[in-house]
Image 1: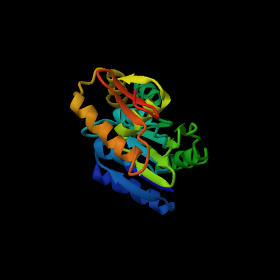
Image 2 (image 1 turned 120 degrees about the vertical axis):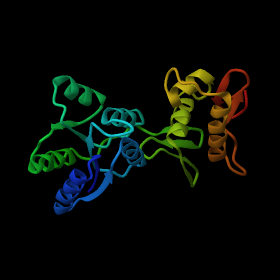
Image 3 (image 1 turned 90 degrees about the vertical axis):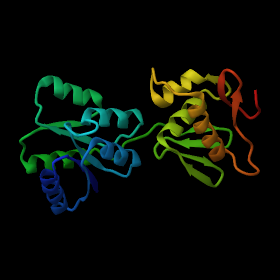
Image 4 (image 1 turned 90 degrees about the horizontal axis):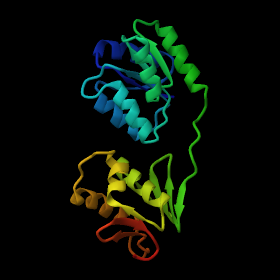
Length: 225
């Protein structure tokens, strides 16, 4: 079982690493919030132990972004901040458990074992349009025997387009899906991601399914609008 420990204090991180390794776990370390988020997005984790007070981005931000991207790795948030509002905020953000410092290593290990016993999470069914499918667990698109990996933003854009296949999705709706409400994203930036998706969706001899609705947005159709 693979555990990610996100802790900015090297001494504590190494202590937790040794404790988990003594129990037979494979352990990766992240020392700031950006590292933790990137490793969480990459997938393949069974449990994450996430400190709240991380540099660059705090644990609340990390777990919110992971859950928004449909990453469901079981997560224990660890912090010295034990006020009820912090506990509620962590759980509402998507954490599965919350442990306050100082804590006994045996307690942390027991909680990790409890999370791991909950089994493999279930995922919604894949999205499909014509002969194209979008794997919502791995964030990969499949067409015939070909598989292509997607970045987080590519995945969010394609998911939105496939959910509304046959309809024109306005530019603003795509920006909100990919970057969040209120984000300032230029037409050129959006086009770069759309162009990348087109290359992954259709290669030589394959019908292009992603089309431009000039002046409005984009659409998934078998023929251009």
